[in-house]
Length: 253
Image (cartoon, rainbow, N blue to C red; front, side):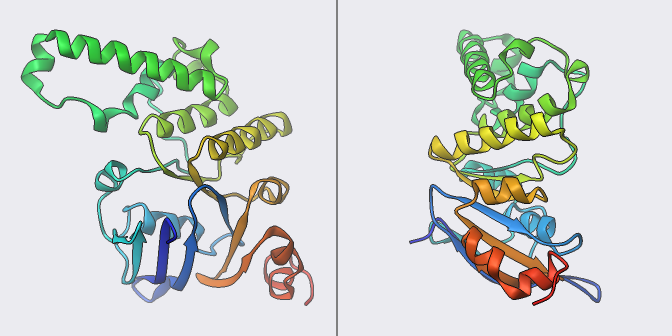
């Protein structure tokens, strides 16, 4: 059974059909990329699966359980994490504090205990900081641990956002344009990090415009065009698909 099954998924905004009857499956442990021209519906698809939008119709199943319409925090508790096109970093916090925020769903929510600084809360905070520091090492940012986020380079902030998502201990992570706005060196660093995340056993779903990165990383690729599924397959299959060449690459079938 696939980790994620999407069947006839659609969403309409008034008369605009942003995603139309899209179906696909993702096996555990792979890198799955979603590509397409601007306006193809890629981020909307991410928003549907990760609970930002509720589908007009269709079904989304995680390990066979229907999750369509569930809130992002409910999905996070089921092991689904994501990053966004635009950075969602708390710029007035330190880098390590940003990563610790990602673990909030695993915190003891007893406000009285927190206010009184019970020993269990103090131990928990120390454990979370240690976990966050390990994640910062994992993404290559340990030297920035105590730096304010607003003092960090843009490329480092993109990796910091991935570290924060990893702090949720996901089994499925959605990365929305992780290389957007990066220079070639930073893009290579993110490319290597995404592979590292996948090699750690986390299934990665990726929206990205950098085709070299997509072809290098992806086990399978879904191509969208005007909200519809245009093609799906390996990188080589997608590269040779005449419909993809015509619609996405601007060539001729």
